[in-house]
Length: 462
Ligand code: GCO
Image (cartoon, rainbow, N blue to C red; front, side, top):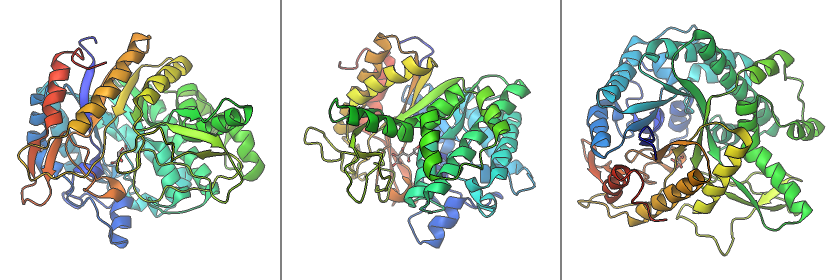
């Protein structure tokens, strides 16, 4: 483990900041959707907005040298005309400066799902204009924060916000329309490439990557049918993001399959060139689970898992393609139905490395559980064993030559887990959301992680 290896933990703006309408921040699509549907929201979340100094000090005291965060577009840009909110810019500059003062490397995601509502109202990711608006927003980020940041991420997990927002319907804008999912997927990948383009053209320092919710695909057997189903699953779960961002091309067999059933006339050849020419420098992988796949069995519903348990229903109909197995008797599942499978990470990292040969980060990994945080110290031995086994898997992959640059635990402290609310806790630090000042207390895993980092990974049991 070299000395520059990043050992950190991760957050996302909407999930931790709170202050949803403070200092001229405008509404995001999540604010509106959760308010309108009367669902648990992130209005206050972990109130990182007012606690960031203490939280970053705690991260530092926990031995960590990196912090993954995201920038909220609606905090930075006030309207479609692109008016910059200087208070939002100041807020993020303070956080980033605070990181640098403490020798913490910030790993900064430009878009972690909180689209400004004013863009959602124009059609959101179904509107081609939004890809170009994203590019302008990204440019503002590079200009305003470029002196403080070396590691940029265009998008967090296109798969989940696109599939959940346009196909499954459990995230805003809550549509259930496969044609729309395809259009949104195209616009997001285009926006990512446009972000890379403006970054390279501007000559800003550092590197730019993408973060993918990584689902390595395994098959139930070795038959040809299963292998074909696995390819469909891999295209659906991984390739449309990683091939496109890293090699500049949507998988051609996926396009030809989609072309049989859907209208692809919205695809613009010039934009495909932009995608081709602007690939990423590194890959961040959020790993929660693999997918075990069997061929489509002609039932009415084909299940495509939400592997990170990102809230709501997991059922999607994708006929003719593949099915995901959820009741593998040999598998261990979390209380939220996510399979625990460190071996999937090890195999998957090797596959991704062999395919793309780009530096890799684990940008999220963790376990979500219900916990009693009124105790002095949460004894989260399950989290310790979960992290131990996944870090060990990562180290095995490194031994086999995979170029790993960092590991980020999800999450730095307890925060709002989208549709699951604050009950689903992932933090290394507990937050008692019932106390007026949102009391923070490190869990046992926080101290364990500190020891692991100080040992440069040597204390991991393999
Ligand atoms: C959760 C998830 C996380 C976050 C994250 C994804 O339930 O909170 O497991 O992975 O949703 O925002 O990038």
